[in-house]
Length: 475
Image: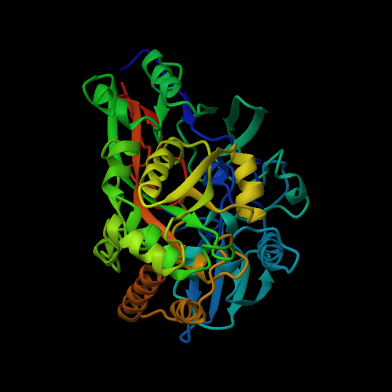
């Protein structure tokens, strides 16, 4: 018998600090990376393999026409402030998320819902307007977590959920601490304290791991340092996949990016391999549309927009820009964006497009680019799963409009047959490749590095989460 108790605390690091901690009121992935499955829970949850699992809903039945879902809720659940969880909280949360005044960043997840009814304190019936093949999956997103009726308004600064960890404190600019929830309704995790530290600088990230200041960096920002850790037996290096389609986004409503030939020219001006090698040290997979290569419906369309500077210059001339033009490129803090941006700017310059680089902080990017649509070009990884539908949203920051694509997305959402959905997904990928509303760069890798004695962190990111429920230290 081991005389020493297993270690029960963990300090793990992230690149970006979240703007707040309410996953139902913000698009930043950093929110979910802290709170998903740790503080907040949904009716369902997405597991490490991407499969839908029960969460606050212990079980459910689906009607024959796939338009009615009856959820049977877990018993004895309480929010962190002691309030009892019941069916009224589910109705409140889903109605709040889909309300006209909702600030939910993914309101599209709830579009199919027609009505949410409380049948009794532990049973909820959700009626849909049409069958939705993604409904149970959508209910497992961070944006669909269940919040308390009395505590929801304060979740940005003091998140109160039903999960296995409670929010303890937030030292702005430095770290967020979670403590184990002794009253958790489910299986209690091995950890009783978890500290999330924010380390945006790649050199500092490497130093913090080597010094033992942090024991895990689930999404490590310094790919150039990976071989050093692979050679060090104190660490485990786990290279997985993410849902992060990384793109050079273009403001389709702003000249000259409203011209399809200009967007085509940009697509052919980009050497994806050079971006992956230069910014990611070879980690990452080239993509030709907005779809992850590990998905069964993926089509490799990288050949449709091959690197061809001569063709790019020809297309620019046809578009009325024989001498190119000057533009701006706003780059958020992550390494892939800053390093990738330098490479992309050089490639654009080679065909006559002079892109002035403007570094912005993450809060500025969210405010100026994502919300304000005040940009020409930007580079960012979209880490949400199943998010092809963002190109069908009129209010999205790309300002891309294609009625045929929009109709196709509506058809996908109303289709539950896997073979039919696959064919529709493949058609949708083709439309985006043809229209080139953005330049598709790479599928972002998950470079996980942590102490070799640590178990239970996810290899892949099927959803943006650092789920700590199964994390433990071994001897």
